[in-house]
Amino acid sequence: MNTLEKIQANLEKYNIDAIVVESPFNRRYLTGFTGTFGVAFISKDQAKFITDFRYTEQAANQAQHFDIIENRNTTKEIANLVQTMGIKTVGFEEEHVTFNQYRQLEKELNASLIPISSPVEDLRKVKTDDEIAKIKTAASIADKAFTKILNDIRPGVTEMDINNKLEMYMRDAGATSSSFDLIIASGDRSALPHGVASNKIIETGDMVTLDFGALYEGYCSDMTRTVAVGEPDQQLKDIYEIVKRALELGISAVKSGVQCKYIDTVVRDFISSKGYGENFGHGTGHSFGLEIHEGPYFSQKSKDVLETGMVMTIEPGIYIPNLGGVRIEDDVLVTETACEILTTSPKELIFL
Image 1 (cartoon, one colour):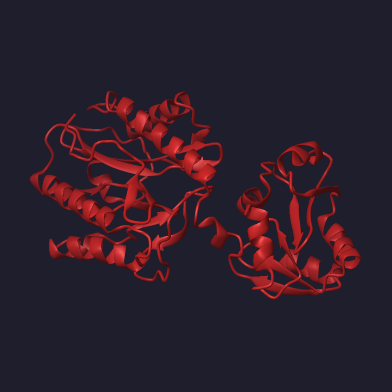
Image 2 (image 1 turned 90 degrees about the vertical axis):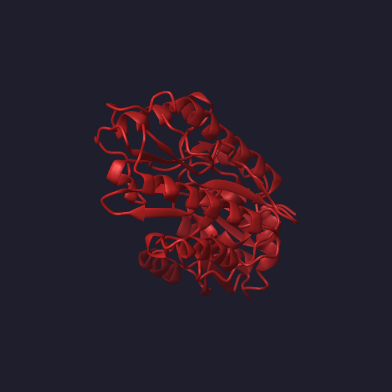
């Protein structure tokens, strides 16, 4: 069953005759269309893709299961389809439709508008074989770039120097770009979980956290390694071993059928048992794919259960203000009995 057939099969569950999908990532997932303008209109037995003259040829090539309609005024065209197809109820993505867009649809459509929560995102949680292959390539690119960047991390260079070279290495290895703004945080800045690269100069004794990923054919990877430049503070070396063990425990607990909350508990309880519970303030991980943050999440609030084919990060961290921090993150593919680790860079502490 392809992605279009999956959403069509769910229309009855949502008690709607058709659905409008305009959010870029969901639109790409359902149609394969990579352009910047277009709307999918899907009923139980028909699939229309509305775009303008700039993209009709591209849409015909990419959205092969859809009838392509050229019309810049997508709302008017949806209204025409509602009338000609006898549609009575139309679902829309409640997380993505603005109030102004809703008002336009309400004005033009002679049908009931039904807000639907995450109709496509729920399908995206379990990756297809094609998606998994692309994510594996993205992870491999990140691993290759990490190996190369180790030769550049030394006292006297700036975080931004490392940021730029790491981005270049990923592109050289086949990435379209990085999959998010890289986090390069050294010294006491490594205590910032989202410390994007600055002009700070890396010094002897610094821990350097590198959180990065590659974008390959639209799909992301996301890994973190923390390395030492010279000899760091003993507490930071101790923290590193705690974080590494927490990661190992999290990975060993992953398999199909396990609650996402449980993975977070395993990791969090271990860090807390070592006295650093208050220094681990973020979730244990998240899924990713077309976007760098997708559901499900490893958190105490999660109600999701792992399924074969989900791709997740596991990323424990400990952060000590005015001292520094450590985070180590792997990408894993959930299988029936365990998980496959996709990011293979060393996790032993590297001294540079």
